[in-house]
Length: 252
Image (tube, rainbow, N blue to C red; front, side, top):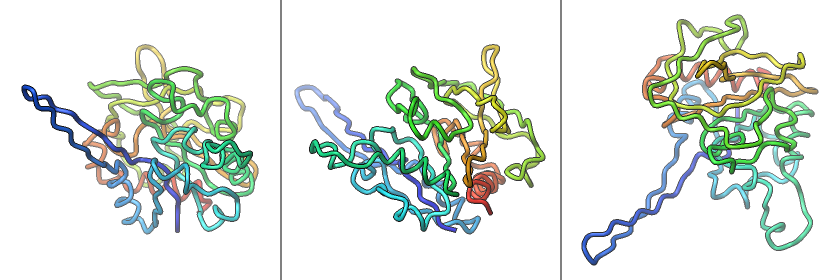
């Protein structure tokens, strides 16, 4: 099975002042290394387009998406998909969020994962609220900064253990260190599989939806560090859970 992963790469520039001298260094990080390896062990091949490459390289049409059984968008904002090189040059073109919606309705699978640039985003900059991608999700994005940082850890609660995504998942899920707050779509079209309790409220962690011929999943924490704790990454069932999500949205 082949899936497309968009996002999860980060470039950081650091300046250090030592007396009158300033030293600058740069680093490039792929936050999906563990995710990609875990899916490979599950027999799932990942083609990744890093966040910096999404504006130019993310597919423009259904024909280009057709070889992919599922698409995962993780830690890359809506603008990176909306602002194509043509749009930046002032030319009318394609809305790739519309393309993703049509992809799902036609039978494709879509997973939106959390992070500082997931859902509406830690500073409200991911901007998936009021978009065609939000239309197909099992949750609605909040129209403001939705990031929840919880260094002491959040304990996930499994709500529907009988769902195929949770097949073979025994015992409690390990803690997560943060998540995006979202509004579960309570119209009968979606199922809430896991949540986290924080300050008197239960927030969706994993939810799914069937729409048209396709399926979507909202995983409102990271697929890797830092919100996904090292305990979660070291958990023997991490790969199975991620693989189960992908297989379900892909219709396998």
